[in-house]
Image (tube, rainbow, N blue to C red; front, side, top):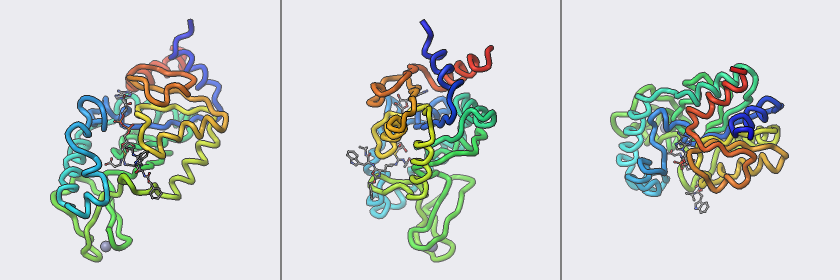
Length: 244
Ligand code: BV8
Ligand code: ZN
């Protein structure tokens, strides 16, 4: 019986245009907390209370306290083998793009270049009033103000109830249409519209490989489901691909 790892390696070896769709699970082995799960962020904080425009305008200091805390956490984290394999596969021409829901920036730190961050990036800030944008290199100390107009700066992430950047979405759909294989890694598949990206790829005839430590609402549409940590499964697939 061909193992799921070998089946995945076989599909990857024959793919013409492979992309990866990643969620918080790919950063779990870097010690970035996921949203759900026993030690997830959403166990301690209600995202509807913090990751919404209403929450921010009601209490910007509280929301910034939460993001500064997460920035501090993420600053101490490093890419794990899962991020590193994807970056290596991009260099080798095996992987064309990473479409990530993650805001931690770990794919770029691992060396991936073709990355679409559909929910923004926790290290970027933007002014709520003018066009000012900037990238932080350390966690904010207190609620930051715009140096141009003095208004509040907000995290440049997509909150619940906010639509995703139209240009990013256009690029995501182009990648989904071009792909003939999608790796769906470490996502619970519940937040829309990202949760529907694998279905769009499948509609265009693409095959789907899911890597997750548990089954998800997307598992039933997958061609291959590998129930393993991403930091172990991706190196194992790479070993089969490299014939080692
Ligand atoms: C929008 C950035 C509308 C901020 C995030 C009712 C029904 C359906 C939809 C809705 C609804 N009510 C509201 C909505 C829409 C809403 C939504 O989907 N809500 C959900 C909760 C029901 N969506 C939105 O609001 C989106 N916008 O719809 O706009 C609109 C349209 C037009 C015009 C105006 C408005 C915006 C959503 C973006 C929210 N921002 N993040 C921040 O980070 O602070 S969401 C955030 O949570 C992440 O970015 C990510 O997308 C999501 C978490 O999902 P995952 O990444 O999957 O992580 P999770 O912890 O859930 O799961 C981890 C997985 O990894 C698990 O499966 C686990 O088993 C696995 N795992 C763990 N360890 C490992 C592992 N796998 C492998 N290896 C391991 N080691
Ligand atoms: Zn401003």
